Image 1 (tube, rainbow, N blue to C red):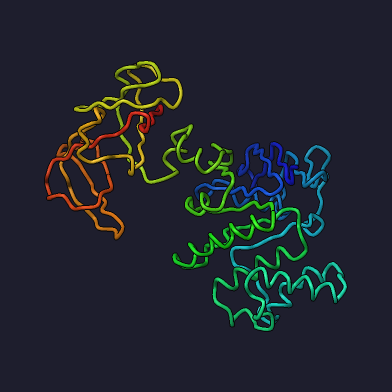
Image 2 (image 1 turned 90 degrees about the vertical axis):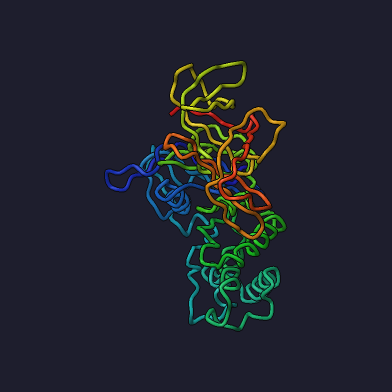
Length: 357
């Protein structure tokens, strides 16, 4: 069953187009994340679904109910869309107890008092806050406040939960823990959730599917594994992961592979689209795919070590020849090579993606 459908949605801020024909679906029990750089349109899309922004064309359907139709000028208000909203700032009322913060949406819907008490306590227990209902927001940690905001969005059983960067106010360690909690909660309760984030690790950890937005359109969508392992455009390849970039031209085409050539080097890779010999291209390879001193791999370069940085779980190395046209490559390792030493850097051809441009 499809809980949310967006069809060819357009939205402008004045004369500036922000969404340029975005279409997507959210199925029951699915978590979809809107990912992209600042200004890509991800928060605007979420706010348009919520009814907080006014599109100019397209349709938004929640369940089997049309809540916005640009052709007929039909638009249902925010409160009538019955969506759960979790804001980046949490937006908790400081003068209300945790119980009353979570109960507020039920009181607006004139739910009977006995039912309010039962449903709020059930949500508090699910969130691990069962003993904190009579405290106030300032008496809770950041992580606990985030759970309260989620509880307020869940308590009236909305068909879709909208999350606008819900973990961005937490410190790095707490964010890692919150990812696990949020994903487990969504799965256990069978929720359908649409989330905005700029953090790709967060998106991959929580999502069933990722929609990568770029300049108001969906650049690519797929499972976290598809988005990371099989990018279809240069933007997708460069946005996901930690990458090396090599610039050159197509020297040769053979079967499913292409050879990119620089001034003093050549590498084989997989074309991302139609290429022709002589065309200027950019090759992208994930840093973790570069192997040091691997004699078994023919697809390789030899470069001197420029510097090494210890990052706790691993070393990160930077390699570059002295001339400016030489490629710069990064790799991971477990030990620190001698400064200035030459290393053979091998790259599997099917992990080198070559794109026009």
